[in-house]
Image (cartoon, rainbow over all chains, first blue to last red; front, side, top):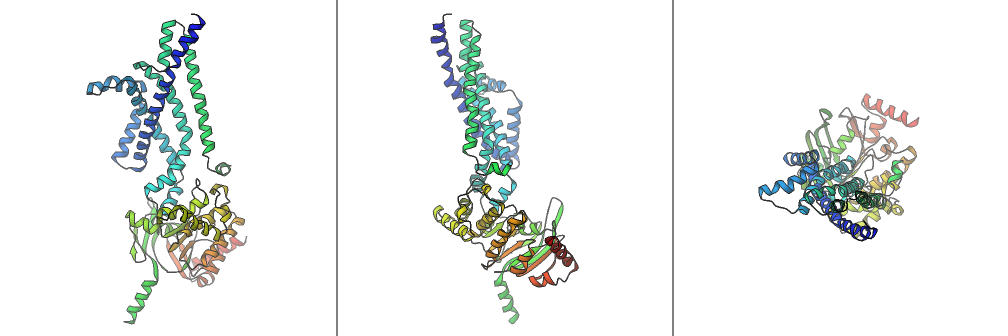
Length: 222
Length: 259
């Protein structure tokens, strides 16, 4: 194939997949974060059935393959009358899956706050809501940031699974072009694009950590 | 008739009454039936060996540790775990922890102002003005914009005392406020304690600072193995203890301090 066609047809075609990949990632991460926060709250604050439901949810979604979950949402749910387009099904499946991991990240972050902080808040007569809003959340989010960014980066890559049910994201477009041109090198190009997204995103973690670091915290660790 | 009047007067003067308090952790009983009355304006120093239950006693008062049985009666009302009334009670009691327990993600000023905003509904600006006044009073005005972990242990503990004082508590509880500090940092906290003691506020303080107890306390309570072994006028207990256990403990404490 001539270089011009590669440069002006193949590459632009694949690049068109980037916004779709990013949308899949951002939407499913946001869904995972919201649902994950609720699941974590259920595990930390609630007792009995609510906590158990959250636990079962987390074990189920961590213990079964994401691909199976995507197939279940896309091919399984129509059996009970819920028909979703491939994009929505992917966002839901990846988001539900990520919620399990994000719930555990948030729960661990809350557990990482010293018991004395809770006691101190209690001694000041704070309500549970005030305690979480003013004391627990601001500290937990700092502890959780590196792990949440890590999860975001993981999702960038997991979205490639959406290609299997036909979402025209980055990898699907690359696959299509390989089939069309018989040039497997295109996979390398796709890999390079994923890298170009993931490396700066990982760096974001360091920037956020530095920006929101608690003054004096480093010194206290020494 | 006279007896009745006297009793009534006494009741009016009692701020806190602890009745047959039992508490513990897991299956281990730490407090084995403690009863104590605290009068308004009284400064009580609680001493005792480690593990004797003195910290637990202090934490039981605002129900930070849930008693197994017994009653805590503050201003004539029995404290319960009913959340609204408990919160109201807690926002009237100042508590200073051994490990300061300031909130690391807020400046010292915010640490002191936040309880005023949340517990008393005072607007932020006004709360911060009040917080600043208390910090300045304790010589921490210059450090108001610092974060707790940027401060020394002594400064943090004085900040924690400021936080407890800012709410203008009817009772100030201090749980070994100097024990976590190096000897050279203790001095500044003890100085602050003297300053606070002069305010005439009701205080209960668990401490091994015998000099402070001698100079500032109205009453000393000696706890050992979960019971009050001896209590009475500060000077009497510290200088002429009636019980042998008290004497032995005080002797040990003084030798250790002088080493």
